[in-house]
Amino acid sequence: MKMTRVLTPLAIAVAALVNAQQASADWLSDGDFVVRVGASWVDPNDDDDQFRLSDRYSTAKFDVDSDTTWNISGAWLPVEHWGVELMYIGSTQHDLDIEDIRYGDITYHTDRYRVGSFDASYANAFLNWYPLSRDCMGQPYIGIGVNYTDFSDEHLRGEFRDDINNWEPDLGIRDVDYGLGHSWGIAGQLGVDFRFGRDSAFLVNAAVLYIDADTDLTTYYTDTSLPRNPRLSVSDDVDYSPWVFNLGVGYSF
Image 1: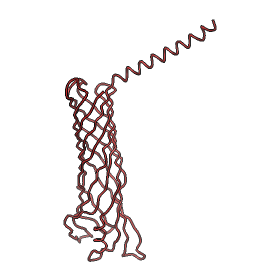
Image 2: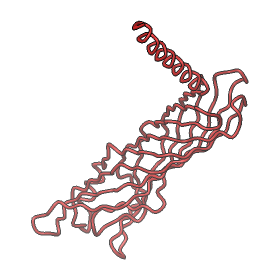
Image 3: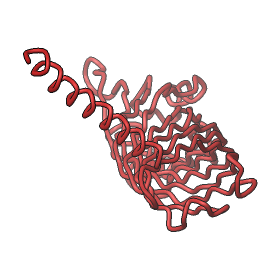
Image 4: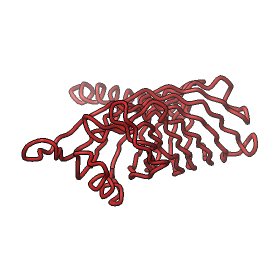
């Protein structure tokens, strides 16, 4: 009798555990996983940005070059028409160009001048909606999510620093440097997966992304017009927000 009292609850517990595992396995098997790798072309926004050399001087025009890099992503579709996706876009290197330096109403013409460069990398998380059924060869999707952009390796060309130090007439600033902060923002994407065949696990992918990335650009400089030549800094908001175009291949399982 005692043995029955012990075994009966134990059997019930084991049966409940097995049923839970089977239900979990069935639920997971209802989902699809997609892994993609490819290339990304990143085109930053620079329409309204300025590069301030000090609290008195700024550049009249500011240009950031585009660059191409790699990307990798993984998507999980736990239910019909919906999925979550994690995407990493590798580091891009962007050259900084300026045209003219402005001090109040005075403009010093420099033509197009390369002043330096910086790197940026991008981590994204999306919630995607897939309007068609999973057995379709072509599967468009639209997603919205969050982005983290990390800026690094900021530097100015030595030639540019020398030109600022030796500018005629004297600008009153020397040893200019700068840094960029990181950015959190909203991201959106529109893409399509196209399978090589109705029963094929391999696919090609194309997508366009917009990343809302605002950051702080801080310029550091020595002010030679003040006593003791203090080291100062000035910051401005920069709307980096790039368009990203992805093209790649993937595998679903």
